[in-house]
Length: 300
Image (cartoon, rainbow, N blue to C red; front, side, top):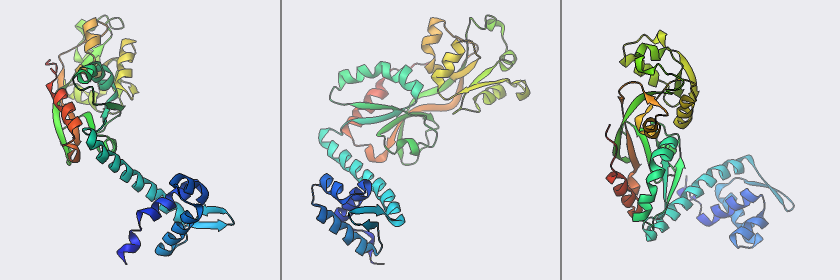
């Protein structure tokens, strides 16, 4: 097949996408600053090139055919990526433009945001848009529209540059009011309590029980939460016992609102700043990375 048929000109594609979105040549023409007849001719040229009808025409009314609807769906995503790439390229004249940073919700609210004023004091010209994301080990789904991500994992992400920030340690937490006997509790006693869980870490308690040599039959599963922040609040309310990253409960442990029952255990994972290879030369990202890596991370 002739490659030209598979790669119509951008003007034809933009005219079709606008007409398809509005279901109107007139509204598409207004958006594109063209005449209605010019848009109509471009769509007809595209149909002739593809040798397929994209619109059904009834007088002045137009409606997408099944093929046209499929083509519009694919084109809208493709044109969106082109526009995004263009904006990112243009942003280079402003030292890379604003950063879109994805971060785990609780880590963002309890650890990153309280420190961001320090970054802005050093770099008032750089804007960081922070997006809360439940980020899985497979970061592709969270990274497609982000400049960088702060997440927890193994550090093995092909196609990404990763900077380790902090080794993750998990700690068993309880409310001293709801559980006044916490000082004398054994790991077996803990396993028999209501064990609160974060849905993104379904095996956390099982791994902890294994590390203590306790039979899984002794475990008492409690409610699950999507956000670690909600689990921490539930522990404070006396609903059960939690197993959470120690970095996320420093304030509660220092104030005495919560207590740690045993020494924290390393989870085998770490927190990382990661970004796609193609972003490594962005000046704004370099500045943010240097600042983040200079922070005095807590050593437990």
